[in-house]
Structures are given as structure tokens and as C-alpha cells.
Length: 188
Image (tube, rainbow, N blue to C red; front, side):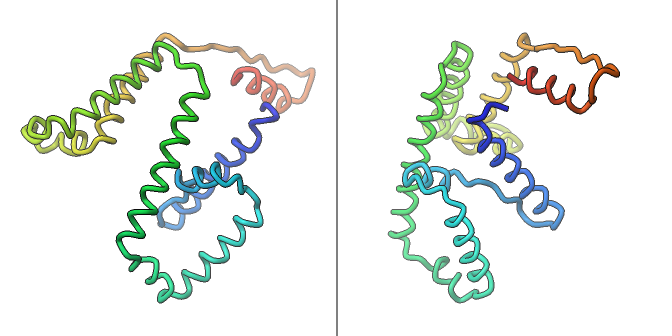
């Protein structure tokens, strides 16, 4: 793994383990919320001390339901301000992610058609309401419509982009080392 990507891999691993533990316990899985990621990008605060202190606060709040009720009964204008703030941060973070990589023709088509399809939901609501009831779960919101278009387009455009590699295990070295090296080279 490249040296600069170590935090990304560790974050993905921790996120996956959190979801696994949540699934085993029968509770919703944990994930790195886009809001938290955007606040981290804005403030630059990524210390483990901050994470552990927030975890302690969450544990305390889970034991004191009256204090949690204060958050639930937050005034609507405060909720709206927090929503706009978080939405703006997520929008900028998304733009930074998209702009940080070169946009190929394939990506342009996927992004463009997905956005156009998503924007048809509020523009032509009568058309989508006239569709059969079973399609409303796919066409009922802007996000679901964008996903319904983007995922198949991505799959279609990836059809001719397969990479093949061969691994030959011998007796000359440790098999785990050979497999690690093979995976490292194949994933680059």
C-alpha cells in the first residue's frame, strides 16, 4: 500500500469492523458520516484525543436520556442552520473529491446523465407519479434516481476494463509474502 494511503485504509477497515460488530449485535452499523468528514476537513481537527472525548460524551449521553432529549427537542431554526452548514461542507467536500481526479469521458457521461436524470424528478413529478407503484422506490427521490442511473452506467462502462494477473506459488519463499507482493502490484 502506498505510504500516503495508510490512513484511508485504516479508516476503511475501522468502518467495516464497526458495521460488522453492529450487524452481529443486531443494531445499525457505524460509518464515517459525511458530516463528520466535512467538519474534519474544515477544521483540520483529526486528533484521536478528540475522537475519544466525543466517544465518552456519547456514552454519557446514552446513559442520561434527559440530556439526549435536549438534542431531540432542538428548535427548528437551529436544526435548519446545522443542516445548511453540514450540507455546504458536504457539497464542497464532494466537489473537492471530484475535482481532485481527472474526469475521463466515461466519468463525464456517468456524472452528467445521473445528474440530468436526478433533476427530472422535481421537474416532471407528474410523470414519475404516473409510473407503476413498484417503481416509486427507485424514482421517488433525486438521490435514488441518480443512483439508479449511475450504478448501471458504471457497470456497463467497466465491461471492457478487466485486468488479469497470474500468481505462481513455489517453494522458494514464504507463500504469504508472495501473495502480499502479488496483491500490492495487482491493486496499483
